[in-house]
Image (cartoon, rainbow, N blue to C red; front, side, top):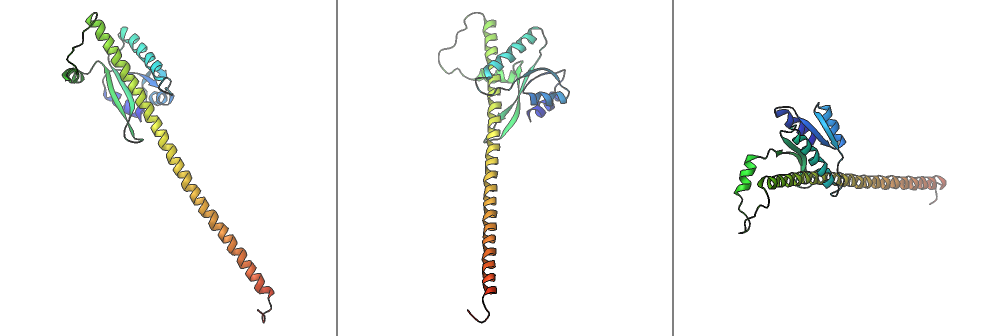
Length: 202
């Protein structure tokens, strides 16, 4: 789902696209669609594995940005909804969304003490952007992992329910066949008794 969503969204965006995929299945799907794939990262199987993955992605993005090879960064991932339902979403990480910046600037500071910038403004801004990118990618990985686990849990619950229903059907069939066998044996006993009993005596 997320691969098809990414293919459809990227086809509507102008310019050339380079794609980094997390997971072999998504990588293969994007490759079949003819997208220029530049990297493949393993899917994190736990929350602890997310941080190293995010670090690898950020280092790769920073290196390409320093060479002037990155204009925009879009992030595609699955976002969990209620229950086992999830949907693919897209977030543009860079350049920062102007509407998002205005909304953020309009939020009042929670305390009366305004923050102070230590050091140069440019270095602080780069640190904020780096932190924002880290949190955004980490959250996307966590939401994707939650979506996958919820989907697997729902599939296991459906399989468990199907097994229970199948066992119930098999038990009913077994009891019916057993009862039929008992009835046939009783009919055979009664028929044999009637055949061996003389007609005039009871």
